[in-house]
Length: 269
Image 1 (spheres, rainbow, N blue to C red):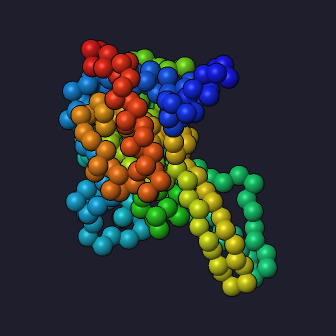
Image 2 (cartoon, helix red, strand yellow):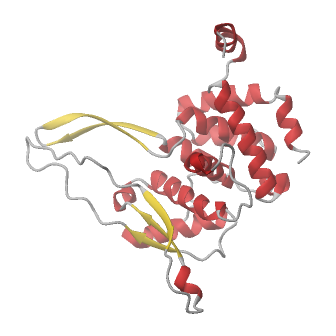
Image 3 (cartoon, rainbow, N blue to C red):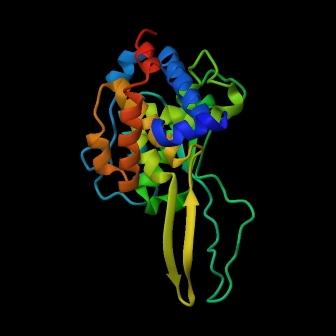
């Protein structure tokens, strides 16, 4: 991209992500429409929100809570009848050894995984049961747990695609995040993308940050805006449940996308 184009984008286009990523997302939206039920499927989909209306519980705790949340994620994604099992990953030992020593793990475990164990076919459907795992530490943060379950469920849905995502399977994790947004979980995905908090434990005090997923906050917000525009819904309901700075980004992205002629063409697929 030329310097002149960068300056123009900065002051006039007001895009929230780089042009190349914006182009990729439009291609990804085209891929979703073509391979996962068409524009009608998007228009009839649910925008899941972090409320009791969408995720009711009966006081479940631990793994029972994770299973209840997964059942809701599957229902809102239109995948309630898709069989899969949920398992908790092994818990990490505590990071604080004592008041002055903190363990650092060189490689953090994934927040979630999706797999289908390859076993000898005995004619039993359960032999190849898809399995989703999750980090049990996420039980204290339902928003991040739901976004993780949505991402892993998107892996499952992606298996049904006859075509690879834009730029091939090398970027399948980014496409999985994008697909999770189009399954209706964009608010959860965007709110979970970056977490920054102060912590205090005995004599240990400080700040820590963490991230989840493969798309950035801005990229997820832009994808959410695309989803809402194609769905024919305003940004208001999503804004009510997004972090304030993300709500502002969503309005900006939506305003710009309404003028993008490429999006109108997506409805012709």
